[in-house]
Each structure stands twice: as structure tokens, then as C-alpha cells.
Amino acid sequence: MGQTAVSTRRRIGEILVELDIVTDSDIKGALEVQRSTGKRLGEVLLNEGLVQTKDLVRALAIQFDLPFVDLNDRPIDVELAQAIPQQLAAHHQALPIWRDGRQIVVAMANPADVLALDDIRSLVGRHVKPVMAQAAQIMNAIDQMSHSDNRVQETIQAAIGEHREASSPVASRAEQDRDAEAPIVRFIDLLLAKAIQENASDIHVEPTSDDLRIRFRVDGVLHKAMSPPRSLRAGIISRIKVMAEIDIAERRIPQDGRLTATVSGVDYDVRVVTIPTVHGEAAVLRVLRGTILGLGIGGIGFLPDQLSRYRSAYERPWGAILVTGPTGSGKSTTLYATLEELRDPSRNIITIEDPVEYRMDGIKQVQVNEKTGMTFARALRSFLRADPDVMLVGEIRDGETARTAVEASLTGHLVLSTLHTNNSAAAPMRLIEMGVEPFLVSSSLSAVLAQRLARRLCEKCREPKEIRLEHLGLSDVNLASLPEDLRGSESFQGYSAIGCVSCRGTGYRGRFAVHEVLSMTEEIAELVLAHARVEEVERQAIRQGMTTLRVDGLRKVRMGMTTVEELFRVIT
Image (tube, rainbow, N blue to C red; front, side):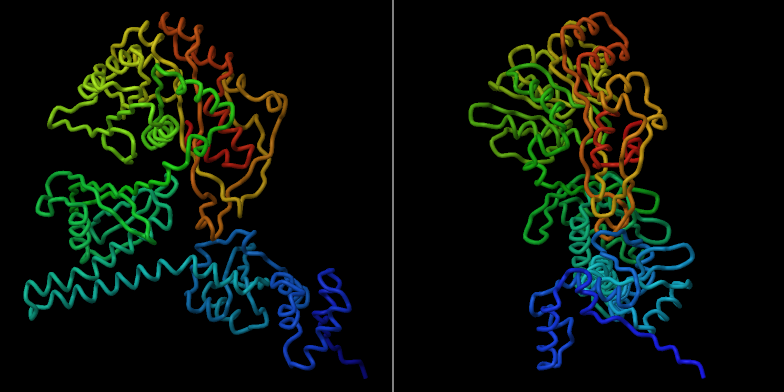
């Protein structure tokens, strides 16, 4: 007769000793407590403080001959994880986390739960491969991905139900309006809370032929957030207009307004614009976060050498400083951070903006009003009679504003403004094209700061990646401004964006600025006077120490702040 094969599983205490987490004497003491209390050995060791939960789960993984996964360190495929209902995942304490070829990897607190494996296998339609993970981490991941979405869906369903009840022919018109209002109010409150929680800068509420599409712009990229049914469209748009003090009866022209949203005890200013479309009114809500005012000039992504060049310009008592870049490149944020540095009782600071986005104490802020004739140029001329030290012009849009700003900077004032150009070297020529004399440009301009906003890599899920310089397509100008150690290298280590629960599967969390600071030196002033081409100005600036946008971005790629793909997305 042959012997019957008996599978033996190693003891948990033995594994913990081998891992040097506990000693033999620790196990002996714990076994004595176990015998007297009847508790499991792992529970005793945790209660005695001899092991941590992570250590115990790792040992259990070895005992079950399964891989151990720390969900805080490894990326999760958010779309895959959301393929199974939240209730089922929470009940089994099991969550699909990524694909491995044709298999689905499932993080489990109890890998012996064959019913859980069967349920998940039937839902995903693939073979499943269990791995061990801490129960608390699994539940936290489930909660992060599903909690706010479930609240939104519940509110939508409540709004639909109450909307139908309020529309009943039995109810009076007053009763219908009152009853339908409550769920819509709750929905808008939840929408604002969800957008702020996800760090959205803008909320787009857009009617379509079938429903209402709501999208959030997070870190500069739009993504779909929810789609309430068409029946709620009128109520949602009307509620937004009421909160923003916009005329709800006017639907034919764009309108502007503001509202205040209170989330977790914090007040947020929200700028609202409504736009008539073929499917009805759309609304865009911009969340203005006062927290940017506390960042300081050093908190927006400047590297030390770039900040030193910029600071040397705004610490001068007079001259013009321009911040350039496309819409949405963070120009206003940089200017506000600069004003934070300059704000003190010894200076009179006045701004003219369209619109005034952030209100700052100790600064006179003026709103452009074309209807009353309060333009940038007219306000600037008035400012000069109000004894200013520093003036901020929201944007130089025309020749009159450009000439007035330049003249103000030559009469002993520091003038800050923005201009739409692709790089810093193009700014002097743009002013000349707007009608400012070259000698005024060269003598008034202190510095030009060009910038873009790039998404910041999520540090929890980024993965190392070799980046070869030959694949980056750098121009001779950019190669000339590379740091010396990079100029002699063929490659450097960067990172790839992967995606996890913390970054909601995008691979990025937050944004920072990429900079290029051109200082107006004598040599560059001579080039401006000679109407030199932008390329000549740029080459001279590089010879005098300027780092281009692309190279500043590559330095930050090398530091692990972002990816090459993201850098090239924002710098074309």
C-alpha cells in the first residue's frame, strides 16, 4: 500500500521567528497566553505588541504560499476594482487590483474564502489569482473609490423620486416648487463637495440631447464625473443660477456670477458662467482656492536658480515684469504669490483685474468694467495719480495698455502683468508689435517669466524608467542649456505614471509650474533695439544663464516630479 500524502501547513509562529520579527521566547510566552485565553496566536501577538498587522499578514501569506501586497505601495487598476459591487467587495474583504496576463489579481484578507473567489470570477469573467493584503487597506481602497460616488447616486435617485412626486397633478404649483427644490439643493451641495474633495479647479455642467453631463477638471485635465437624468437639468441649472445671483429668467445670453460653497467648515469662492447652447443652458463653475495665497513664491515649483533670477527682478523698486504663457498656465497664481512677497505696510499696492479672483487684505483691488469705461489702460492712468509703489495689471491686451504700463514702469513704479506668448524671448517683440517703441521696451523691462503647469507624479505608484536623451528630440538651443552632467550622458533615470487609488488611477496628484526666466541684460537690450529675431534673443539669454522651459521641465522629470510624456503635453 502506498502512503497517503498529507499536506502540512507551516505554523505561523515558526514563520515569524524566521522573519526575525519575534523570538522563540516571544512565541513561547504567547502560546501560554493562548492556552489560558483561547485566543488565536496572531491575536495574542498583536495584543502584546510583539507584531504589527502588516507583519502578521506577511507571515500568513507565506503560510498560504501566496504573494503579499502592500496596497499603499502598489498601483490599483481603478476601473477593474470598480467592476464588482462595493457591497460584495466589502462583504468578502476582497478587491480586484490589477491584470496579470489573462488572470485577474485579487487582494484578499482571507484567501481561503473560495466563495469570494467564485463570486469575483463570475463577475470579471476571468481566472482569478489571490494575493494577501491587510483587511484595513482593502476596506480603505473600497471606501475611497465608492463612497462619494454612492452618495451622489443616492442623491440623484432621491431627486428623481421627489421630482416625480412634486410633478404630480394633484399637488399645487407652490407645493411642486417647494418639494422639488430640496433634493436639487442637496445634489448641488454634494456636487460642490465632491469637486472640492477631488481637487477640481472647474465643474462643467453641460446639457446633451439625452441627459446632463457633469465633468471635473482635475490637474488641468477634464474627466467625466456623473450624468444626472435629463429631468433634473432645469432644476440643477436654476439652482446654480440662484446661488450665483444670476437672472434665472434670462437664458439667451451668457451671464456671470459668484457663490460661496462651505465644505468641511471651509468657505470656497466659486465663479459661475452660464452659456446658452443648442441643448439648453450650460454652466461652468471655477473653484477659487484661497489656499494658493499661502503657498508663497517658493511653493509653486521654482528651482533655486530660477527663483533667484526672478526674485532679483521683483525686488527692484521699479521696472516691468511680465509673466507669459497660454490660458491656464498659472500666470495669475504666480503674480498673486509675488504680491504676497511684496505686501507690507511700507508699500502701496494697487491691482486692476478682470475678474478679481482672489481678495487680498492690504491691497487695493479694482475690477475691470467695460460698460462703465473702466478699462485696463484707463485704470492704470488713474493709478498713477494715487501714489502707488506696485501696480498689477491683470493682462496686457492692447497697445494702449502696453504703452501705459511701460511708461508707468519708467516713472519709478514696479509693474507686474501677463502677456500671451509662447516663451520669454518673444515677449519684447510682442510689445513692439503692439506699438511700444523698442527703446522703451529695452529700458523698462526687468524680466520675463514664461511658465506652464505640469501634473505632479503620484509618489505612491510611480515606477522608475530609463530616459534616453536621443529620443527627446531636443533642439540645439535646448541642448546648449542642459546641465553639464546631462550634456555628457546618453540617458538618465526618470519615472512612469502608473495609477493607484490615491491618484484615482491617473498616475498624477496635483500640479507644479515649469519656468523660464529671461533677465533684461545690456546685451539683450541691444538685440531688442536692433529688432533681432526671437531665436537670437533666446540664444543670447541661454549664454547668460537662462534655462529654457523644456530643460527646466527635464530637470524636474529627473527629480521624479513628472514624466516626459506630461512635460511634452504641456510644452509643445
